[in-house]
Amino acid sequence: MKKVVVGLSGGVDSSVTAYLLKQQGYEVIGLFMKNWHDDSVTISEECPWLEDSNDALIVAEKLGIPFQTVDLSAEYKERIVDYMFNEYERGRTPNPDVLCNREIKFDVFLKIALQLGADYVATGHYCRKGTIQNDDGTETYQLLAGVDGNKDQSYFLCQLSQEQLAKTLFPIGELTKPEVRQIAADNNLITADKKDSQGLCFVGKVHLPDFLQQKLKPKKGVIVEVPDSAEQFNTASPSFENKQEELAFQAEKPNYSVHDGKVVGEHQGAHYFTIGQRKGLNVGGTKEPLFVIDTDVESNVIYTGQGKSHPGLYRSTLFVKDDELHWVRSDMALEVDGSMKVMARIRYRQPLQQATLYKTDNGLYVDFKDKQSAITEGQFVAWYINDELVGSGVIS
Image 1 (spheres, rainbow, N blue to C red):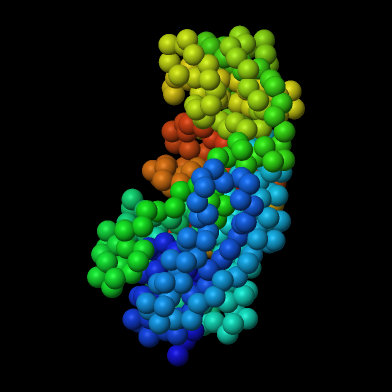
Image 2: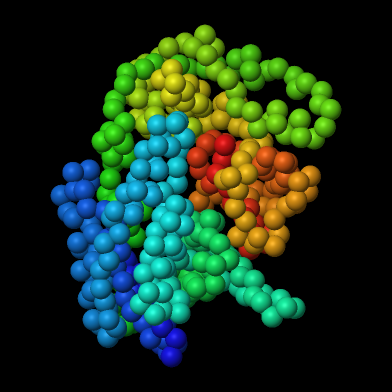
């Protein structure tokens, strides 16, 4: 009998994952990951991880499976929290959920599971795994979108490798969320009606600026409003000698200075803000709301523009450096000067966009058919062919 360790999070998705695997005849072990216990930065009185681990225990008892808690808080702090602080300090916006999957669930947690003699780990992600049988007898694994288009979570797994996918099962990927809740209700699982958790991966209900203020101290700076008629937006494109030159030009972020607009307010630190952000600026009196179009952490200035169609929010091309480029399907990785038509997204739940990948000797350009709003450094771009996620990278 094959043994599977399920990451029981105390939510309905992982509860049903464990139930389905037991039905399918696997020997199932439930493991709860405790990844954070600095209660000074949660913003509610409740202790989310305690409640969640208790629910996970009740589910395990109901299903008759062994259960234990593992404390991964040291690894989580080192690999996720410290990385987040470092990225925000650099003026980038990290995605802790993608990192948590790559570094914790499918690395540290996976290794613990294998030490327990498991053949696989399983999680309650809405995605699917495909297997291609190669001529030489080896197998290639596919990361496929979940059947429930409204809940597809393949984006969060965009950094997984063939080695990680080989040891992973996604039992609810073929189901919709209502079907999952129904299975939980039919089997009297305590999590059937539990709300989905929001907030940082495993940190709980955290107010992000409060969380960041532990390490990144508030620092007063100015908010500059850049008019949509500013010089940068109205210059004609130069002529280019080759495609790479053109892509490099299109991927270049506008370089703003305080003289490009007028000072309209103050902020407490450019490193707390991200491109496309509207909330938290506290500047009134504009015809349309202000959106962050750029942050300069060196000079501690936030540049904003009025309205969500402000040209400062839009770019058609982004760049991923070689050392931040990842192919889930390593067999499909582009050679230098190679190109590939794909569908891509730059954030979770964004509808897939038509794009072309161009590989250069130091990285990869993702060139979108339509301009994209709020391309944000530090976030992940993921690209698909049909419903298969084939690669991803950190936006430079």
